[in-house]
Length: 533
Image (cartoon, rainbow, N blue to C red; front, side, top):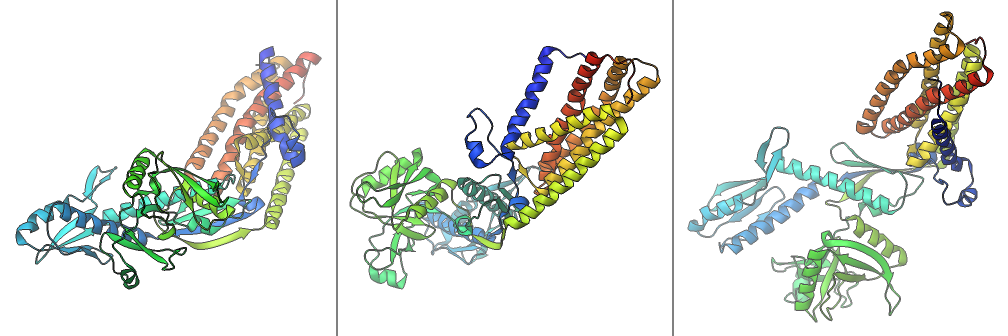
């Protein structure tokens, strides 16, 4: 146990040196960090919201809007299905809880009923392997059919909307370049957002960001716009920058392409006017559809709609090929950047409302850091004093390994980009005690070997070998618990699990390998006849 090859010694020292290099940026100024060579680590430990302040927001997904959107789509699906099969009926209507349609002729009713039943989409319970429909079609009498969403269909739509909103919010925050934001589901329809060290505009997260491209409906005149009466195939959107001064425009309801067809969006400038704009790129399907629509409608206007508002309505001068286009309007440089970020992140499936917002100031973070440092220092000093008093010279080796262990933890947190929170500091304090625990087990074994009359080299070697199984069992079981906490925990629990996991690995390395190397070098150089532990 006390024999180390040159290769092993080199690897151990290299790990320690690299740990010191990784931890070094945490004690340097930003200017000093910038002056470090490119091959050296430059990342610092990221402090959590409770330590450095930042933004706290609680957003709620409007699930009623999700269901209303589904019924709006269902109205169009019912209308299109009946029209495609040449079944005459009154225009379907929705009251927000069902879709009602009346078939004109008795002989078409049964066929219409079957066609509408085919609109259902199966919902499968992965646990019970039971498939159910997301809609229910009912005969209301008098050739009237009612289509409603089933409870399973509503539940699935709601869950999918929250999950999708969660992902979109996370992507939007990532576009800001912030480190280690916390974005997680809270309850059934809320999203918790914590962004350390940054102030986030809630409007950027709440903006739906739904982008669509529509052809203008030239059959709708100004009088129809003023009355708000347009054909079923069309829809009216507000147009604040309307050069005609009407402020509204009727467009075909079915979009040419949507934001789902975007692959990229970048801010830029018009080469002729130097006005800020947004350049967008479509995927293959979107490029084909956009090229086909523009080639067939040269000389006509098409509307670019963002969140049910027309931001631009350019005239198609020629077919737009290549899957690229640009959005121009009353943009500033910042608004063009913000719109680009929104489009890259994708649109929200439903509106979000801001339930709670708090900005945590740096003063609270500084107090928390100071309190955490004091707790760690007190625990650290107390453990070191206890070890020296209990084990003497062997305690010095354990304390030196403990110092190196703290440096390795700091280096690992920096390299991994993990967020250090107050619970994380608690995990480090706990690690201090666990790191010494392994040395206590070894030193007590060495004492037993000395009492049995074994020489110093054999006593130390046997002490490490016999304590190794107990040390590994204790640390592996704790590591498993920490991994489970990280996997299934949230917020403070995960912060605690991160530092605990890192601390377990570094403490085993320092307490078992480093102290053994130090004692091996001392024993082989001094060759003591007796030792006292």
